[in-house]
Image (tube, rainbow, N blue to C red):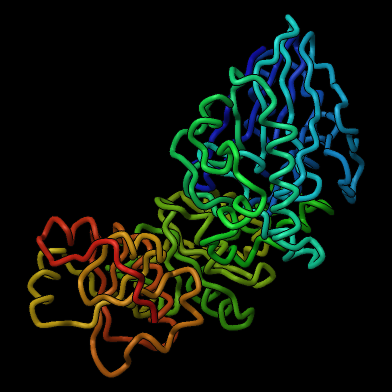
Length: 469
């Protein structure tokens, strides 16, 4: 049995390609399906099935387009109600893939239809489990997301179901099984995922807090539900797109790859009330950008922060990108359901400036300069999440996490300068761009973030309760 994990770091997402005897199955595919089709072509295999572990919230799946282009059957677990042709499996149903088998094991908890797929090789040996968001490496799927689509599916109710699924359906399986989860560290679908993207079930039984022997259901609920951050705003919309189907990514690309002159770009931004998204690195954005644009660099957790900051999936987007990065930016936006791309600034910021239009800049300081300024007690804002801040932060800094910053704008002074920092300078520039867009001017950020600040010898405090605005 040929099992390949296809990992996409931008989303911390793992899809799986499983092939045997010239037949292939794709598990939890991303919206851009061409790589899966090409992989099967290289193997001389026919894609027979598209398995979905659940209706995903953090990305838009390519299941419908992949089935249309290959003739594959889409498979969901029990209770799923897709709005397109699909096979809804019974608990325990077995699907033949060449001489191998895939067995559906209903494991509700993350969502009601969540299903784990047991891989059985051509010799009849149980090889591994593709767990979706039921079981991660070091964590389990958060059970609070479904309530944002259906209020009856409360976090408490689903947490109880997840406890039962793990103990009655997963933990009795062999310790030797490989565990293939849908996500790794950095995904918003869990809170404590390890950096490793595969493990064995035996190792997870020994190390995963949620599988601790003797853990009561009440203890499990408390542990799983504690410390969950609000999900990105696009999650409910992505679920609906996955349940009902959506446009092919090729259509989104065709609409979005429209070059616009500075005049057309400016007029479109005004008329359509569009987000202006600059996907260049933070350092480039700081040196000069189109006024009122939001910086979310492709070189970081682009999909997560685009989905968090661009909080209205129906609002159109205009792009400013690095040379030749227009298509990649549109693909990554399409993965999270942002389909209304109106076009991109042809020639980038150079063309904008050549046309006589002004660029805006952000004052970006080195960590050594921060250390000098810190002696004079500046106003310092840490935009990392509360867990990072609580672990260690600059003495005297306040915590205004980038996720949810819009609800705490009053924390940022308008009558004095202030300094922003994050872990490495990526999130702080996103925050700076949002603040500039809303009228703040006297701000600066630290180019290497807290990592550089520590190296510069600035006083830090450890293990404190977060001081939030």
